Image 1 (cartoon, rainbow, N blue to C red):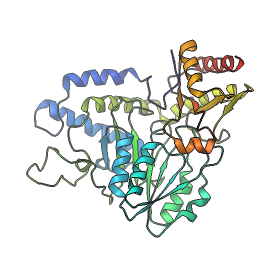
Image 2: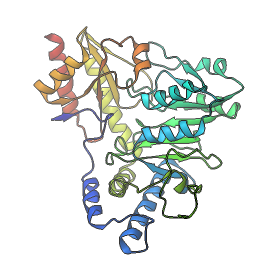
Image 3: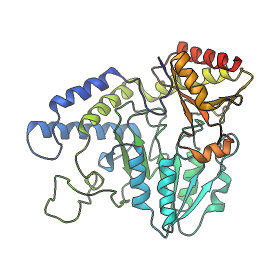
Image 4: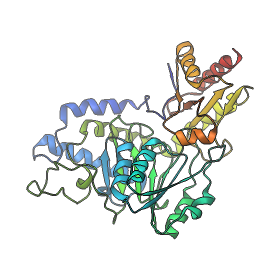
Amino acid sequence: MIYLDSSATSFLKPPQVAEAVCRAFATVGNAGRGAHAATLGAARMIYDTREKLAELFHIPDSSRICFTSNATEALNIAIRGLICEEDHVITTACEHNSVLRPLYAKERVGAGLSILPADAKGRIVYEKLEEFYRENTRAVVVTHASNLTGNVTDLAKIRAFTRSHDLLLILDASQTAGALSIDVEEMGIDVLCFTGHKGLLGPQGTGGIYVRDGIAPVPLKVGGSGVHSFEREHPADMPTALEAGTLNGHGIAGLNAALSFLKETGIEAIHQKEDGLARRFTKGVSKIPSVVVYGDLEADLRAPIVSLNIGEMDSAMVSDILWEDYEICVRAGAHCAPLMHEALGTVEQGAVRFSFSYFNTEEEVDAAIDAVGEIAEE
């Protein structure tokens, strides 16, 4: 099997991740719910994971990082907890439904919403930022990289706009955490939402949200916290404020091991390999006459994602053939990115997405190029 679907989830992971999860089942208790060895060990491991995430994202205070089950939960905390009915928000056509649907929900109860369009290559039309600004604009919510085209957002332009108008910058780093360098202070990120199971190479059911000091989202859920049990209100101190209930200790243990691997390997080394594989694939399939590749392929910085179509073939059919005849795993269809498909003109056909991992090889990439070529010839 050749796994080229890492944008959906990283199937290929460092072996120490599974080892850490298995070890956690025999050692980890419920953090913050007692003073015995099992719960204290869990608390130390979770604290260490926060510290590793803070180092990775250049976050000055690890207590501003809260664990979630995925990026979708993190984005719901940010959008539902920070955007009020009287606010206006700017987002983009590049967004995943984990951004769009919470924003649409806010729009239904009175919030204003403006969506920056994208051109035929999936590039954001930044020039409309000032045009969309209103006196009640509260935030810009944007993906760091499109999960369909691999285009990376120009955060310098976004940051200049948000700082000039004192707006929040809420970043969806689902496709870039662990794959590209992220510095929350340098990039002007007020809220960072990320998942653990993609570029961070951790288990599914892990993720998190960083919230800059001075910002306090209304919690998405409240309940048990292990502290202040006689108070009616959920504790407001971070990270407890956004972590009601038992954390996924076993998953976080796996994420901890994955973060150690990322540090030892280096984000730049990971990016260089993944980028090289993606560009090798792009160069190969672009030579096939009936293949159309989407995105800004000339950009210096890209996420390791390549989406294409073969003539008029339905993308789902191409995906099925790749699996059934070549045992190549890809993702076809709409990719939960409806507005980007509208911009690319692929609403009916969808697209076939190939996404690459540090653990893929050039031989696998070449096999995928050959498979696309054979399907195109047929």
